[in-house]
Length: 228
Image (cartoon, rainbow, N blue to C red; front, top):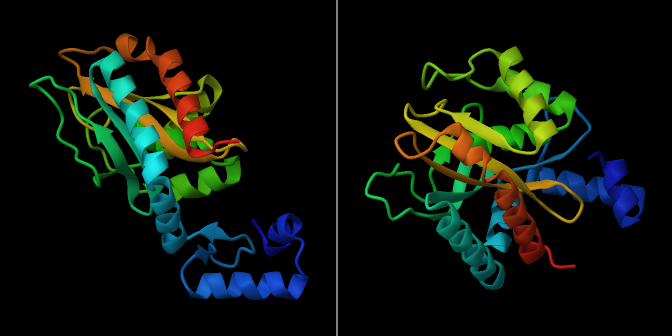
């Protein structure tokens, strides 16, 4: 948002808003891309937001919903938020299967080849998405990783239309995943709710079969994190 757009929400004197934005930018709460007039959340503001989502009441409600999802899908469930270097697992419920992928809380995974990362990218406005994708290192983690920006952008368009994203062995050979967006009351992306598992137990058809259940759980998370 630009300072003018921010002021439309606050209704403060124009000079005050510009001064506040300059202070927040200087202190690391906001930043801008190059010469753009639009402000984006910076590291300190994202950390503040994550801390709020980890506060006791919302954390307990979120944890219970993740446990419910894990019991239904019987695989590892993740709640991931975007950070500078990728999607970070803020919360996680491990499967009780002996065979599982070890990606603990705090792990950062790439944007371009994970279900949660592509879920976030698909939520971005078209111009910002194109700029973001062009800045990524589209490293080939597996033979299935999309390493060309046009192929990735086509995938993101499909994700935005259908409302969920897939990892079809793009991050790890032998692992598939599905992710759905968790949004705030204004429909803005907050986090990705995802689950993954090995292809010995799961096919893409299996994870897609759970899409409606996952979307319902994402709605419950929205209600828990952003009560009316």
